[in-house]
Length: 268
Ligand code: IPD
Ligand code: CA
Ligand code: CA
Ligand code: CA
Image (cartoon, rainbow, N blue to C red; front, side):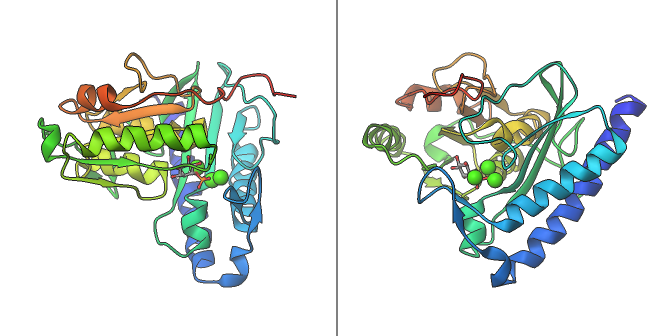
């Protein structure tokens, strides 16, 4: 890694730790968990989400004034979200807001950095590490001995819910050892990277949910795929992140569907 990128990554780690401390304190303080809703009654946001995103963006702007940002709480509703070739920070201030609101203790501050539309690091790059310890995906090749992670997202349209359950039924029928969901895409991806979950898939994620996690999974030896097979597109709002042994089997069982792309023009 060159010095410029190293400098950027060091700043990302420092600001992620600072943001993490704010989130940790807020988790213990009910006043900081005031709930507001966005697109629906199950799409939640709090002042802490907004405050943490503001903190990260201001801190980065001071040091790298020309860099661009895609932040979950700064993208206006209905606005097209475009990833360009410019150096871009892709930020999810609290991944797992529903967990946060309920004091369910799994949340992440997720920061990815891209250049030429390619994610350079997800807070730590060139190998994936958790507090300095290297991460490695599971070497389990038998999907029947696997734990699969997925989420239900916040889309409650009948057709979407049916697709989610149809995929889940297929996966359970393999049968796998278990299905789990941490309530945050970033944590699910880190569980894949650390080898205790073989695969994670979800339709409906945004680029800020998966940017950082995608590079962490790959650096830990895992693979990313689209839910219909083929290369993943982080703007496509669907992803499979898995070890090599289970990815093909999981892709086969997903009853795929396509939400609107992140960069699609807003609908009227
Ligand atoms: C959500 C979480 C959740 C996933 C949703 C995401 P948020 O992010 O990652 O696990 O199912 O698709 O939107 O809103 O808590 O940042
Ligand atoms: Ca959200
Ligand atoms: Ca998120
Ligand atoms: Ca979020």
